[in-house]
Length: 55
Image (tube, rainbow, N blue to C red; front, side, top):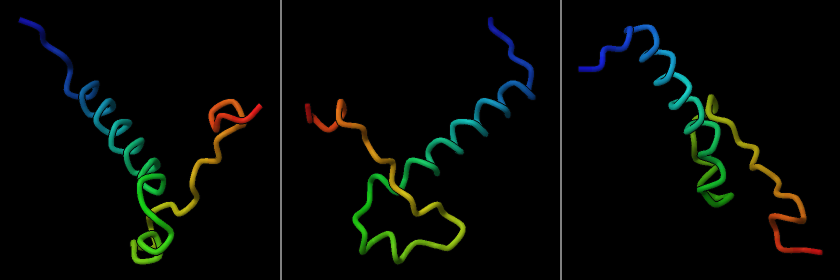
């Protein structure tokens, strides 16, 4: 059976939770972002023209 060191699991979970927290502003509207706690990031990721569908 596979065995992973606890510190490796902790690092992976920390990175996963951090990524989720950073991506949260993209899922909410501006009105909902105003109601979130101050410690959460509020900037949305700006997509380039290639991802927006522009030419």
